[in-house]
Length: 162
Image (cartoon, rainbow, N blue to C red):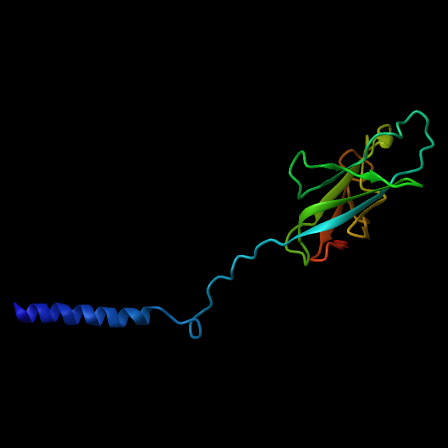
């Protein structure tokens, strides 16, 4: 009986000793998965230049709203009119950084009530600057689905997608 206890103890010690060899140290084995990168968030300046209000049948006195594809529905926000012209500005906060590109560029656009009687029925990405970058790449221009494409870097600067 003593021999079998000794045998079991030796077997257990041997299993524990070889079990340590089953784990590779980070220096010798293949690397594990990369740590999950936490998203970085920045504030981004939005600027929109409204076309001069010359059409008396259109409304020139409504609020201009900004929307970005990173925003949840209902989080669109009104831009503030600047004195002395047709410039509207605002700041989008909590924008996830997506540059250098890992995914698709963000989609951005404005709702301008002055443009209700145009083919876009008020929606546009024309005359829009996001993070200091003028929007130059569009999807569905001239339609109610018109959006601009932009990346946002760690400094809150806009980057053209192409």
